[in-house]
Length: 445
Ligand SMILES: [Fe+2]
Image 1 (tube, rainbow, N blue to C red):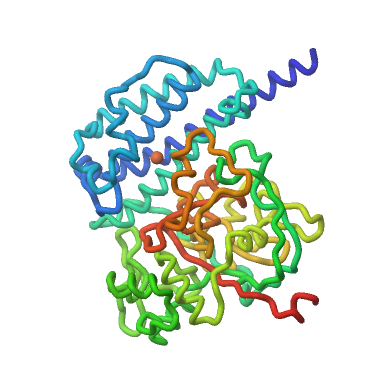
Image 2: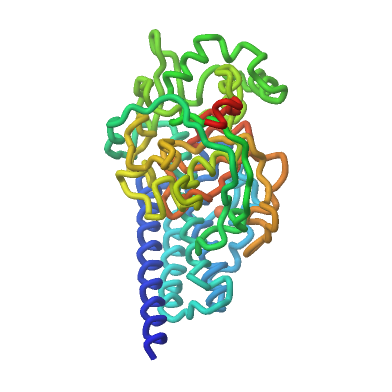
């Protein structure tokens, strides 16, 4: 009897948590799509991006497919539009010419789907079926919408015209953070079996043995990156990989995206405003090739994905891997710059409460960090709930990014979360930190 009551209580708690996450996420989607007029919603602001109105209806369509139809077994709301909003059938460049739902119709569609989802959420039994256990499908849909919100935020950054998004600036530094941190040799557990809303590519948990290495205590800053530019880093093929140099030549790269010279310094356009580049902020809007070239110039390299995760999760006191650098508790506004609370990365030293036990700062939030590792499945990987979520992207084409950015929501960010993109992409909120092998005398200290 007690057990039944407890289970029922847990289910009710889960129901209200899911309802709150769905609402919180929808409020962000509304903010991003109501900040501009209909004309801006249907336009394509960059060939790299969808019109915002495509993202909007796509979010509703995925929610309908997975929750209304699959989990709920209910009648389709609009099966006539499935193909239009299928990301695999419609390349981004073609999306503006599709007969998309106009903004008002897209909003009405989202509202209808959401009403059905609330009705389903009231009745669903979180039984042992993998799709519903611990509310997984609902968590997947929340993360999916948050990921599109970050994509829409990147579209806003590419949009020409005056500023329409506003947020307070990130906090000022309160700790001096510089140099490197030694991560001793030894095993750690990478990935997870237990995080209920973790996606297929974060699983399974597995032991990884790493030699000792040094990792930067903070992401590479604008100030450091400016030195690379000033030292002719963009013009010296020594620092670039073969494909990196070819891309640098072809694309005419000479500074991070959205930068322009400003007297003896640089200015950086963020969401419709030009600001002077601030030296103590992590550099953002660089591609993998730029990150790799900088690291080579600095006499270092990019961390592997395993090195990044060990620095972020491994607790030397217990040997356990934690959910986040600071422990298992959820991110808060004092631990990390996440969730579009601010519109750019915080200066280094702004989040001492978010540091890892070894003293590595700002691993979560601020900027996605490029790693040296191509996107692959972990040993024992099994696609769930569909191959197109991650498996079809495995291979050498995509590099893994870790840690989330100021535009990533906490629901779509944790120590195990993996993002991936082409090595030439920089419209995303991407930066990096460097690492290097430890010398034998350091490794045994
Ligand atoms: Fe999607």
